[in-house]
Length: 324
Image 1 (cartoon, one colour):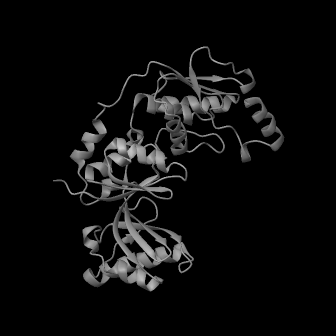
Image 2 (cartoon, one colour):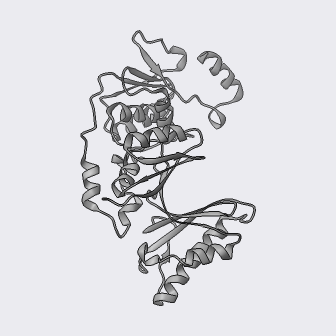
Image 3 (cartoon, helix red, strand yellow):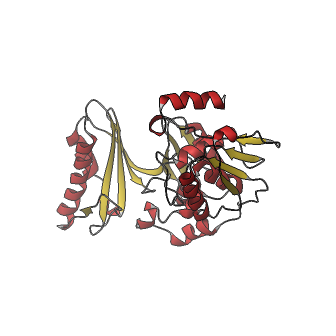
């Protein structure tokens, strides 16, 4: 029997139920929806698959200790009591990310320093040596979450946020986050049964995420690395099997159309679509929204209209009247 353990998938507010459905389809157990997160249990293979396959997760955390603390000194003592050689070698690097919702702990950076000090002191007292702290691309990434006095220390199995798929070559100003784009599409229930149109596609995020969903291609296939690949217990053979398994991919017999009135956006979107290897599925065209014609066949329209820094208030009102 493979060892199962607790895992936490982080996401954006509003996408928790979508993520929970994804986890159910992936075969995760004991799924519990929280605020901007979904807790579940699974084995090492499930952890690898969650990173590789989930479209609406930002990162996958593996909790290693739950404890209560009233102040920073109690956090230090609890962290120092962990058998750190199980997770980290003295010649490896690590980083600590702190998320704090508490009146007791006002500054997340101070909490992160306390965790770092506890780990460094643990190794120094045991071995006379210490692991180094590296903010970018550490060997082991840690996350401490504090809500009032309840603390959870986790290993971050993802590393760089999972929205960074790896296919984006360039971006327009204020591009749509890939996880949000996938969430928008999954919320409609569309899986490729008809054409999909994005009349304001910018750098092509919605068309690309839609094509990945339609073909059932895992979003992790473009990633250069996941944090768990640097862990002591990394199973290369298991991960290779997951990475090379394309048995769930399917044909897509319809088309995805992406329009934008900005030639530069069209050029960027074309680069991104090509990088994702989805030129066959996605048709891009320079076309203003005013020229958009209702398709003859059944289609679905999903778009992220400009707002905020991308458009003035007067233009915005006119655009939304036109959409209506």
